[in-house]
Length: 581
Image (tube, rainbow, N blue to C red; front, side):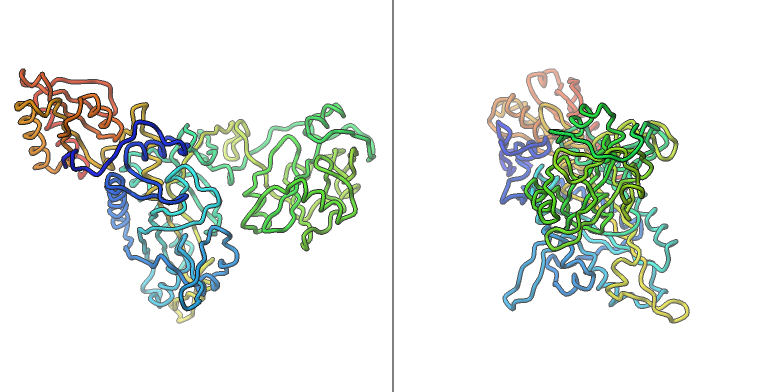
């Protein structure tokens, strides 16, 4: 490809609306252009990267025994109603109607469609197990799309679904996909860590995310890990707490005046106590329903855990206005900072659900809000002075330094970008959709299912987050849009152009994807564009060609070498041929 013909326009400055480096570089280097909020055009350079990632995925999925198909992007409401997700999925589901008034949605995922395909085509245990996958665009109507391709509304994804007859078969395929994913991301030049995760809207009992570990701002989740190989993201991580004082010194329960103590710090200072003897009450709205979360005051609530504890799909903290309204409806005048679980019955037409974290169940003589302004209960005990909620579970956010639940050593924390996930779905979709096969005894049984996703466009963006410098992108060779660029310093110099064109033709002949920068531009402009775009190899034909030498540079190194043109070509050809071994 000649640079003069390549459809690319690089920018001098980063776009003002881009927050993370992958978003900034993809736009500045001419890979993508924004069409609408969270929706991007994939320009030729980007499409080459995407196709390479897709081909790596296809090769490894096919080797793992999966079969590729393609399902419709637009999906009928009826199938989503069968699974029970039409009303439960939330605002991310883009709903629409066709000209006949039929309700449809743009597919954010394809569990319902693939289950209906299996239901029609897999009738006997003799056909199982089987794994079907596709690579396709998806659409999720994100409330706040950001970070470019890392959290867009439209994106490209590989999703696979396995169907089997037993939990044993599911676990075997789960490990098969785990191994395939490890190979895929390694071939894409990414160092990933598989971490325990929350299953979210997909569902299922067991799930893992494959995270690219990064210290950039694009890291979406805290990843807690230990030397013993325990690893989990923040919405799934558990830990063992250090023993500490969780009992107050009061001999009996009483109500004390605690004026102007709206925060835990203010209450601790006023009562001269540690936060570990306070039960903190937080008010949440989950699927429009009021939920109170009780937790030891030195710890924080992990909202996904709380949402899952009540089977919810959407969570947010209640506003001050909602808290005041809730107090009024239930006959109290308390405000934020003085809320307690006792006596709050209903709000917004729903009963109040109370969830207690495991940190509070063994507390004694503790401090708690009693729904009275400027007052707190002290010396309280469960069952004697206040009832312990029926739901007691882990809703605590793990913190760095907490003890590992496996080996007891301190947990470490880093940031990660999710590029893939695997789920053990079980019968979550097959049972409600009556997707069954006949077993050896002729009896109908629901499929035991698994689900396995890879974000193709997310993988490309994550690769940039992991591989870049102040000059631009440093693509891993396997997914770079082109392997090399040949730069003649002066297009008016006949010798430079002859050698550059000979190199270009030699590389093409040996299967190297190469660009020759034939533009009549200053050498500095060409070098900057080459670094910005991220060509893995740069061969510069300049004045040293009179001595039979060209300048050779690898993008991930600052070292410049003056070597013979044929030696430069051999290095690149050998590296490219190594990719296919």
